[in-house]
Figure 1 (spheres, rainbow, N blue to C red):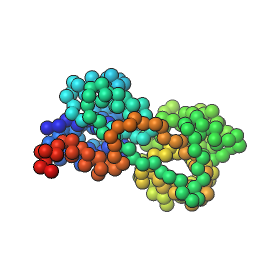
Figure 2 (cartoon, rainbow, N blue to C red):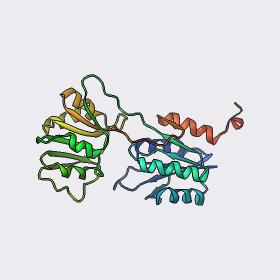
Figure 3 (tube, rainbow, N blue to C red):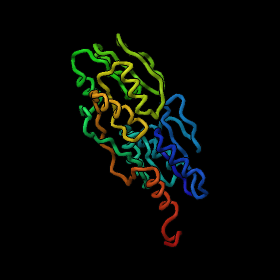
Figure 4 (cartoon, rainbow, N blue to C red):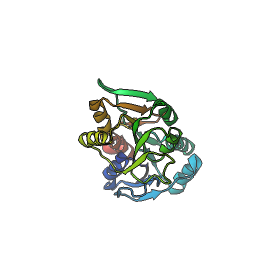
Length: 254
């Protein structure tokens, strides 16, 4: 039986774990960073918390005699992905990654591309605006540098402590978010700018489509560079790669 560790935190990680859970030829553990206070229930054993960097992860892989490491973290979890790749090299362990494709701008989109969240703050400009922050609670503190704007801040868990901003509203919600609902949200709050990561996938694309329909500017934080490891863009494709690892060609007779 092959022991597989999935570094999770995404819907795809949970879906992949579910696909592998019923296999008799592998044992799956899903690792969660622990940043979400009320994570969605998983179908496999879950390990919560960090490893202590690449060295800590490498030590864990050796101690648990893991056979395969899968990086299915968020596209913006660059440090975790780098640690995973380094730990795999140090231990000589096979590693696979799920690389969800990013969104592409289409006709009608008013995207302003920036390299990081600090640049996103500056891209909003000096004049007061009504801004929808769809970044998650980890990055929103940077917008304290621009207190002239009115912010609508959406996150899965509460932003604690609250930001030192004179005009900020907080919305707790977990995706997926439909375009029609995002359209209503943007209209109801008179939003004229959206700040978003290029997360990819369908679950959070609704705000991008709604902003396009309403002619609203979207400040898009570009993706970080990630390690070059064997990867797939979908859960199905990655599951097929895992199948080839668990059941080598000679064992399947093909």
